[in-house]
Amino acid sequence: MPTRGLPPSAISEATMQLNKPHFDPNPVLCIISGIGLDDLKNKVFAKRGLYKGQKKTQKPAAEAPAERAASPPKPSGLRSSITPGTVVILLAGRFRGKRVVFLKQLESGLLLVTGPYKVNGVPLRRVNQAYVIATSTKIDISGVKVDEKVNDAYFAKSSSSAGKSAELEFFEDGKPKAKEAFPESKAADQKEVDKAVIEAIKKTEYLAKYLKASWGLSKGQFPHQLVF
Image (cartoon, rainbow, N blue to C red):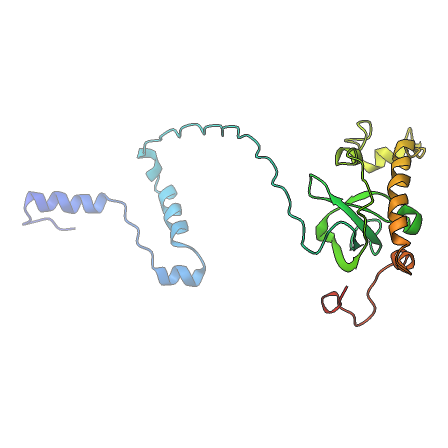
């Protein structure tokens, strides 16, 4: 660049502009080639060694998050269509399609139901209300007394089987594990509850056959169009 006849201030400014790294890529060419402007600037930055004169600042170490106390679980509300004595249809699990009698809601929000076992083979068990269909059929179970011990802890697995995989539970020393006997205390609880429920079922004709029959959809049937 010719500097003859220019004042010293203009010469120094022109020299600074020449020495200053400059990169102005054509945005149209970048879009056509699929290369971003930032990528081109980074390549020129590395090629010219412009990173050598930069100061490196150490980032402060990330602070460990403070431990938060676990919030207590919120109680689950019960659907208005489900009341004690309501016959519900199970939609998932081992007994899907079975009609069972709702007894009460446990602290966890799960529903305590029974078949009864003598009628359709469904024992006392917990189910999620999201996986049941409440029917309009109701049974008067005001005379049924469910012991307070039948709670969430009542259905918890034993400590010996907790934490084991299904394969380890089934096999023991390379051989199929012997089936554990059902506790006599729980069998007695089942009979006690079912006895009162069956007495209430007998008051309505054909109700036992209704509970024994499995529910399902035929071709062309849709659950949202049915009345239960």
